[in-house]
Image 1 (tube, one colour):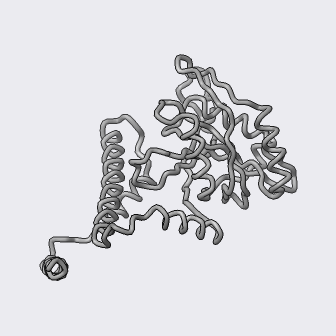
Image 2: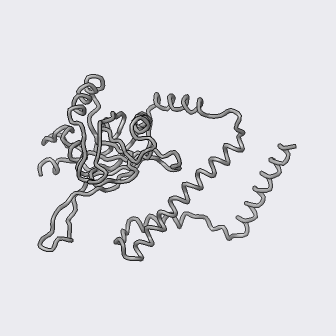
Image 3: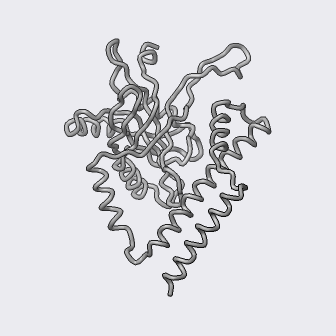
Length: 280
């Protein structure tokens, strides 16, 4: 109980490109074209609840398809790798673990408790952030940000008939992709090698628009499914989520005004004229 009281709640998670590359390479080597997932340890720093995952390493992991309670995680390998990383990067410590998901599995809470044993112990002078769990979606067709972060919280289980029990569960944490200057340069060079110089600028813009619209559609469908589950009584309404949805709807422009319709038509005609003249 003392350890939990000294923990700082997680407020945000920043995932660096090196972690994404390492997780993608781990998945392609172990579980590509299968239904398996891979698990690894996240290294970095945690300051006032803001977790910065700058590095990671893979861990041998297996789980039984028939029995979700049976899994294997190599503790000896984890300890040896962590010892070597400390010799090279003394400031980096264990901040959590990643999984290629693409969703939360029954074993993830138990894995989180195991990873917590390798984190620095809390004291009266220093508080320790609880381990974070980051799902890195390695599917190539994903249009939005490939990371989803969680941290463990304790809640009262009111379903028990005799008395209320406290159980652990995952709560969502905002996550972003961040990079230092050196990492940004490396990613820029890598993308420069990937880009096809024969692709026209117009085609690139169209692909970017289609990607953005596909991501918007995915989020709108997710919002619709949530509201439908609330109406059907499957889940309890969360006023914070509903308020955020209302704010999003309020930010949408009113396309039924005459001056806006005219402005869009003029802009569209100008673009079509430029394309027509460019094709001549």
